[in-house]
Image 1 (cartoon, helix red, strand yellow):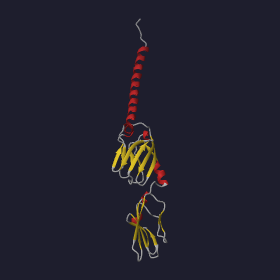
Image 2: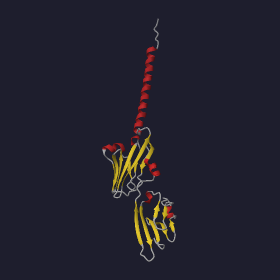
Image 3: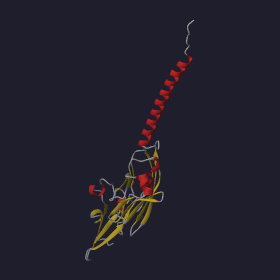
Image 4: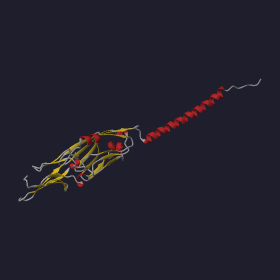
Length: 239
């Protein structure tokens, strides 16, 4: 760049960095509040006008617009499209393994949004949910439905999968396959459901069976004692 050139970098129509006599990166509320998207991450080269984003996350996915205003020359503009796939190590470790109590809900979040054409969720190599284009579908076949009947929820906007009223049998590895015209990635999740492993109906059945057994035992004990008194009680005959 020439000394007289003015450089402006935009992200989704928000000014994030500029060189206008001196180099500046955004510090205003619009740029940093809420997501903390660019705070402390931007470096602007005053000699070349190049912009560097450090420690990138999924929130940096989008279009970056460079506008160069030169004296005596027509202005120029370039657009850079960035797709950040995967998540940071801290985010990956946090979401990869989950442990929940039986009966609670658990959500698996892809962390990439719905920028892909197809997202398919698997549990132990069995397809349980998918989003293809504008259509989403939860598994209904025999192999899947007996395990997850009416307990799966799929968010069409984010691609996240939620399992409600978890059971011990839901423990295991879940895999998400994401396919797009630009990239293809696989995400793995592991969940451990702790608890008795028995459904509420089974627990009620056990309680009823115990009560019935106690009642039968009480009746039998009472009957045995009555018979015992009848056999061993002495009888006196007359002289």
